[in-house]
Image (cartoon, rainbow, N blue to C red; front, side):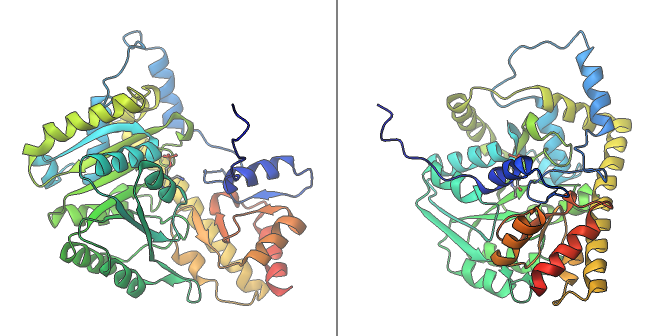
Length: 401
Ligand code: PMP
């Protein structure tokens, strides 16, 4: 009965990580996977997370009963406040609420299912390029009109705002527009505040539905308020919207699958019906979410001293990434590598679209054992003071081949 099942294609980022592990050569560098690494090239458990884990593990009042279908209340409230701001008008007017999800991917999937089933949406737009799972999540949900809007100008290595606006102008009313809240994956290039205003004008005029994907709040700039600027700007302008939050990067809780879907409405009167339908949706998908990671995030965000420690951690991570951007650009300029490398420091977050082409990427992987996506996307966290010279020289060699 299984004979007709066809072999599916490999998922590039996981395949590269496996190839990196299997590679016996030294030096070798993994710049593909989207996770933070220390300057020693190691994964990092945030000290405040470790401390909180210990206190939760020894707390006799905590048990392993099921959470409610929509998750841990103290977590969803803190997550919604983190993204909209504690003084958000939408929170004050009780027209915003959150539901816990299986990390950012789960938030996107629940959002897509709700939009498809309840609001009868079947058209989505995502940036070109985007995190490749956007397409898959909406296609698997049943969306039939899957479109991309221009975003990255490969020649100028910058945002193509004109192209983006022209493409969105063609979207039908009600279309779901996925926007990266900050630290655009994979390009690392975000709109400026001025550009966000133009994007909001168009979305308003065309009556499109903004869905913010917020996977890097605080991790991008080190300041969670700054990283939520675009979302809060849209909320202040009165948009109804969704925010899909991931706590994988900013808490280093990748495998614990901590996420939140925030729903902003024009009026709190729609809260209960929406909440009830999302409850039924999640019930049929996985019944209820895991508690472990949500308890950690909830305790940290709701305890001022721990929250401060977390703020220090995200500042540390984001500044190490910025330092690597600066160093890589400096080394390439020093080597006289042809091309302009300013985009590396103008981008934000862990990813950089280097502008390297597929042939150059192949050289880096084959000759130098430096693993990166074929689009030329690198994870800056894979760089450290011990390997940056090697990587810069390899890029120089690949570009000048
Ligand atoms: N959106 C974007 C843009 C991402 O880069 C990621 C993580 N790679 C996610 C969502 C979701 O990740 P997770 O499900 O691990 O929270």
